[in-house]
Image (cartoon, rainbow, N blue to C red):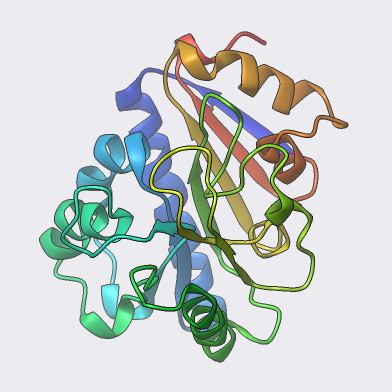
Length: 233
């Protein structure tokens, strides 16, 4: 089932705050912890400062990443660095709650295995995140799952290595499609007219090869947040 909310950026941020707060309260009441995977990009820059102000017990919240570029945390391209500046540091999230995806490790395959193990230790052998929060590219990619890429076909691994991403940097780690689809709530955010064509296809065409479409039609509970420029349906 997919829900839709079309609003200006402020309205999208408000709805996202409500969704995260409700999901966290439910998860903490049921399981004693809340887990979410974070994106980078425009979702982070637009929404993370407001999410940092949520009145949550951050010691019970566990932050993972949907994907990460093979750069150090201090690099402007780092999704972790962006989240740290805009959310984790302002909210004073304790270090034990932060699970950085170490895509700057010397051996990416070992880093992917280690991150899968980290998820499994907290969330079980087939990890189930409470929320997978994602942006979407103009080409319909989510996390570092790009159209036509071999990693899209991965069905066993929790985390995969990408060495040839079609946009720089080419080296990345990403949660796989099955891992994202298992999340109790998948939230995809789209800002801007450049996303409109891919979003329309993802929403309306269950047979689309676009990664966003595959996730929307595979996950159990989805929410699409889009501004008017991105929404043509």
